[in-house]
Image 1 (cartoon, rainbow, N blue to C red):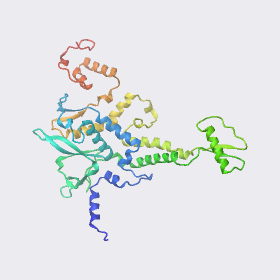
Image 2 (cartoon, helix red, strand yellow):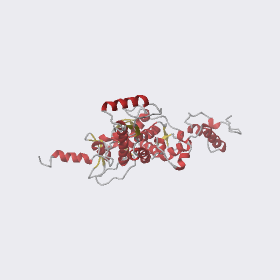
Image 3 (cartoon, helix red, strand yellow):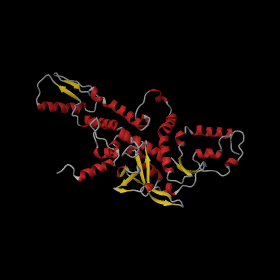
Image 4 (cartoon, rainbow, N blue to C red):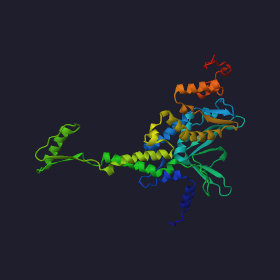
Length: 385
């Protein structure tokens, strides 16, 4: 068989169109810890699962409104946000799938399948599994080419969202970077630690202790002695009394074998860093002054440093599907809310000072507008007359 078989070259050509995540998902190349890491195996690690679900749940459950220009009042919900796709009738599920694709693959893809209105704006965008979309650069024009099942798609019908966008290089299209592909060594270490722990406690064949005697005993006597010991002491903390030169020596786990507990703690913190999360939010630990921060401060930090970049990405991506005069905005005020009393006190101060209107305070609380509320007199003390 000649080495230049046509199917070989065809396979190489197909591989050039795959992203790094697609190659990892297909080959499952082992890490230094000896564990192959794919997006599916990564999600079996509890830390990765929690990081992905925490960010996806947080973004998808926030209210998403559409505004026209600088008008603070939202407009009626457009068809796209009422039923975004055929597979996901609920907007929250659609946004969740977009976030999961970005977090796991670094890219989210959609195909516009319906349009409406005079401007034929997208009314439905069906999401495509990132592993099924091949993205390449046309060698002549340098434009991005999208292929689905080997068929070239119209770029105007493709909705492409990138996580951590990276510039294009020769023969490499502009794609988003995925935390999974860059954290694969840490994820492999976490998978290996969990596998080691399961084997250690499951089938490591390490007895709890050794019962010895100065006297010579037969196999039958040894079995009888072990059965009596288990019958009297198993599951109890009673004092054991031994005679005739019998001795019991407990077997403990060697320090180097027990080190996997610390390894798991460190691994949790490391993976959380790749996703930009406070380790405590995914079951990890932190040291220093952060341990003394209040839950309200942690919520504010989560919104500012972890969630806001993702909100901005999704807002910009959804806004591209809307007319140019419209933009999509999440209402993330819930994460910055300390307590009901603190919020209402802040609204009261703003209204009395004249830089906040009652209607704006209601909007911050995600409450429906009340006609004429800004025209009512505000007596001393801030109560509405």
